[in-house]
Length: 360
Image (cartoon, rainbow, N blue to C red; front, side, top):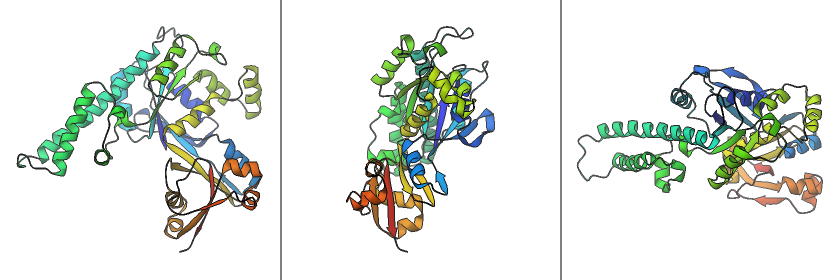
């Protein structure tokens, strides 16, 4: 699962990337084409930690998120940067918009809502260019087609025309009401304005631990009004904390009156923004958090674990984490009749612990 960090030059994207990945990455950040850098980060989850502590397994595998950073040099034009970066990472599952709300000697006073809209405009433009390219190809493929004929290509062309008009009106495709058939048609296009998104305000260091005010508060209100998940942090401070030894990090946070690094919240929210959730398998051999789309049936969870388990699925024994924790253990929850048996159509809930019975 990938989350792309986007924002104007100078907002702190690389600093945030360092804060998110340093020390918590499951693999080293690696260079890629055009300066694109990626790093895999463990998703902080107290439920997973409790299960590991309880079972003391030989192996523990948490959920993870891969962050993608493609920060440009300060002198690079915004449009050139966005076109380059977004071409490289159209395959990301969600976007994290980083917006500056602090004063800068180089960049001057912040204009966060305007900056957020500038990036959104570039996303719309990138989608529009994709649609226009596709329409040109469709017109060539439809050359010689009888007028009035209805084919998969004519249906797609008509949909592209609708999408083009929508984007030219400077509207995100997230607000376009696609029919189920239209959703199938565009499945492979990776439209940027259809990707889940969250907004992170990069605040000044002296604002950490305080109630948001000024432009940061206005940005939060704007995001809430537009249904965008919002968080705030000081990327510079978070990066400095991430570089401290673990035993020093907590005392540093306590001195600032903060319970935990803001990066933990960002990672969790980025995970949620992709529309994913975690279910668990737990025992002495391994405790593992599995990532699955919200609303998935249990047979898909079985497939996630192993294709043979899905093929030979008999039933699933399921209890949510909160139930198991309250009981003290899976065994006790089962004795209390709190473990349920489910067939293939059961919809997995976030935090479910499962044991799947199968035969092949």
